[in-house]
Image: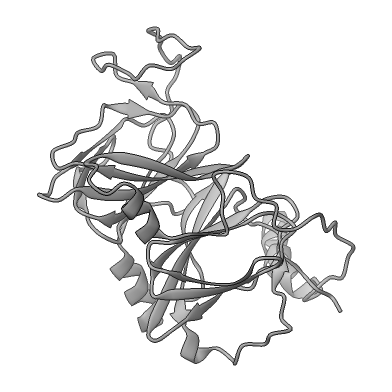
Length: 301
């Protein structure tokens, strides 16, 4: 009986709370950017910077919560066998084909638009399987460490030495929260188009990071309200990888940014922003931040 009453109370709780509670929230200095962060990183500029290079890395986010890196790997590249002791890593394939081998999962090939992840303490390896270079957008929790199989040669790390160790008890394959090793852009978009899925779709959820698939049409939104400041976040930044079409961002002290597919938009804490789908046809952004349910503070006036 007690369990039934508890479940009933949990179900009724959202209806009992005020729709919008008014409170006092801190509003620090907005639009404070430190390298490598920029309001708008254009993929075409990153590609131009590395033109002629077969393999390269470009870090675009490295704050106190998350790190995100554009990575290009040459055809035939095969990563070492590795794992992270305490963090979840995820990738978006922007170009090419990549074969992932993840412990507890059957190997699979991820192509453009694929979103792949691996939980902590789980061995994984990937290989560029197609004839073209593979371009990935790679994200992990800030400060993440990597462990390597004893038969691999790990990279040099100034200030560190590599030594053989063992887990007392290894916890592997902790997906939880409906996380999946592999999901394609097409299947999530199709679910939203058909009505089988509704609203923002969470692709990655971790205690220290999240990625949300936000898909829709500018034509289905009300006209732009120039007075709408949107919201800000008091404890962390938020950023987006544009996965399709265009996204419009009015950002406090920055102005209006129109981002294209493959671009990254980054907004620091305390900074008003109001993203919306833009242009013709469908648009999609993958929103990332360091909190599963980040607080959104809206103007109460």
